[in-house]
Length: 449
Image (tube, rainbow, N blue to C red):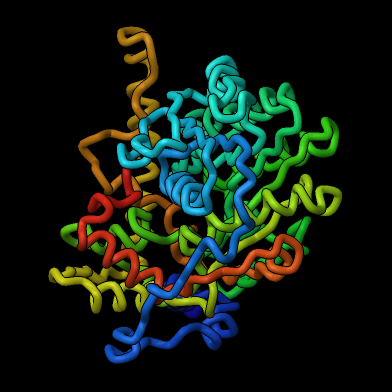
């Protein structure tokens, strides 16, 4: 009789602890104690970003040739803007998609359509001389990436691998053929951040704070396709410096890059309704302007102290303490001129639904595979278009959302001279203003790729 009672009691206790675990980790108390508190309306109204001058925190122009791979994307666009602002005259955007026309209209900017999964396409784009310098680019900022953060299954791996790993290898192969070139690679803090194991409830141990000194983490790392591919690409960049003498560098922005047209802020501003179940989780985030500036700081360090920084990886983040996702959305709602609808959902329900979605997609793909191979000559799509944004509801997404993550970028500040200018409140206000004023297209990064 006691055994029959013990089983349901144990199950109920475990379910209760799981519900709590989906709202906080065993290490959450320490991180949330120092997090930013919810700002009042008066405090939010006092927030200003007008005084920020990004040109003052980057080195002066070099007037050499710059290639920004992925220059039509989110971060790449801001690197282009910052290069223009500081006076560079030879800037090449290398991307599969053309950039906004206002950048192409600038006399200093050109565009070369490039598929980085093809080494010949990369070679054509990188070896062509600039009319202004008569030489090929000497600085390569590699920001291109396939950010399929919602996938972790092996059958999805190739879509991410081809761009993030093969593409990086192709860029390094061509870079080695160029004289006096440097390559700065944009990675992610996800390559070294812990991966939550929710079902371990109170015994789920991983660090909340991540540091550059944690070169060999003893805790489980993120295992989604994006993080795994970024780790592999990092090793290629490090090896190019160690064995081939190429000047390289790696930046790990974190916990995420925010700004107009990002995934986090812009989705809340532009989507008709935003489901949320991650409000308590806190993280440090970096404004896209600061992330762009860090690339120019790294370039300068590779010129000044290459023996100290070549082949190294640096974490970077924004100014100020961590913010909870709930407070971020409250600030967005304050600045928004239209009514924003946020639907609060129970984390346990979303956790279960995420696993159901992953299982459904796995079964769908393998059911369709023999038919498409025989009759279509290819493989089924990984993403059914009719699912829309629901595709993101998978366990890998929750692993990235429901985590406290504090990035320590003191090493980048000390060695690279990186100086973050934006705190989260300023970036939120800037993003809302840019989208609502029409300065950027009202769009967001939650797109199926």
